[in-house]
Image (tube, rainbow, N blue to C red):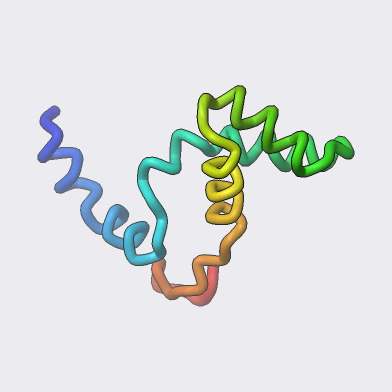
Length: 85
């Protein structure tokens, strides 16, 4: 399958994600957010959690904070034809 074919097949979904402000590159950090919520649930401090995750995922602490902020954000748009997500 060609890249074009995959994009064409998923065009509607990709457009809706883009309209919601979702960056496709962020998908590779889904596990980071899962680890973040787990560590906070275990009682770790935010600063420590961000330092650990930044090192684990090979990114800066600033990037880790930015990712978590985006992942916590409410889409707030009718991107999938229903109400708020």
